[in-house]
Image (cartoon, rainbow, N blue to C red; front, side, top):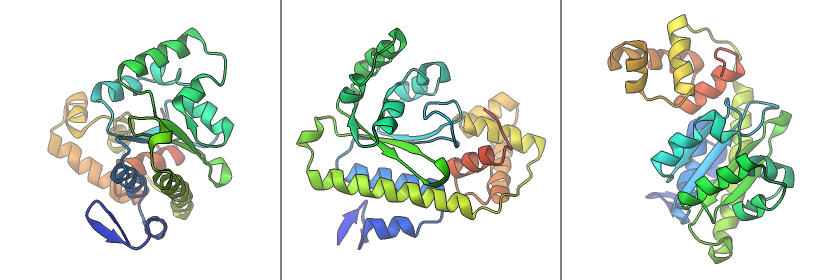
Length: 244
């Protein structure tokens, strides 16, 4: 048996197949990757047929500098990141360095790479995740050292687990009943959640108390049968309850 984050499990792949929340599934992969030494982990889930760096892509990131996360959330900056698209086109794990050399880089691409280097984002890898009905995603993992120095069994586990998680996320989306209605204010709150705003941020933006925003978020989760922000936003986008 393996031990991850203090919980004894027989098989992480079996566990991921039995999770019932999109956000929990994504976080579990990132948690296991962290236990296997990846200091930075991210999962990028895009709506069908959209680019992996579109404004509507939902990103769960762990271990990254908060300033980098804030910068990457800016859609005008994120869209110049060529790594996810090149990794998906390549169809297999690709180091960030290899992705940089895969195509002709524009000035904006080079500016992106220069900015990422300043934050120490040098040795990571990108992993393409393919799902049914064109539901594709991208994940990245960074050990802070060349991938050749990472135990191969750790890399293999993360690759297998991330791919299993993508299939599970797609299955959970297919299980949704596809029906939900939000009030105008609930949709507004969800819209800001999709932009990565915290409860306190939303309270300030909408001139509401944090407790009132918390109540709206609880209602949104109930109506969308979601347990967390990622699941609520993904379903809200799929049902066209919000637009980015």
